[in-house]
Length: 171
Image (cartoon, rainbow, N blue to C red; front, side, top):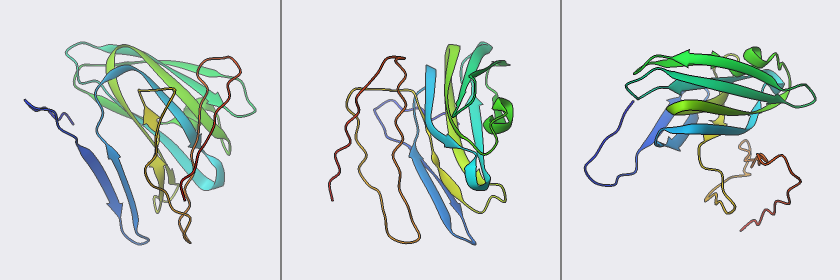
């Protein structure tokens, strides 16, 4: 989907599933050549799905760098024609079954990446995970620890060097 305006806007997407009720909302983001997934998982029956959209006029070639916990890095090269999208199971693509899985997607053209984990039956969504904007200072405005809801924060060090990350919680 493309959202275009002559003024600055904020756009969000909400996915709602009934029985049991699950809702996933996240902001629409501009296309970028590099994307990161910090907290994917195929544990506990989850399926990690990546959707890649090429909004541009030219074919995009991109590398998917899978970083499965306790296993070697897996690199996959993909091409995607202009104006199309593709969806694939990142866990199967990486051979990462019952593992935590981070990743990076690097493209020769700006693309849009969405990543989410869902139960194999589709009964529950575990969150939207992809970002194109790593930074030194980031914020999360809400979370919940009320039963049966859980919240988690995942951090991915993309530098390759040791890093200290501090989490400050406001209760």
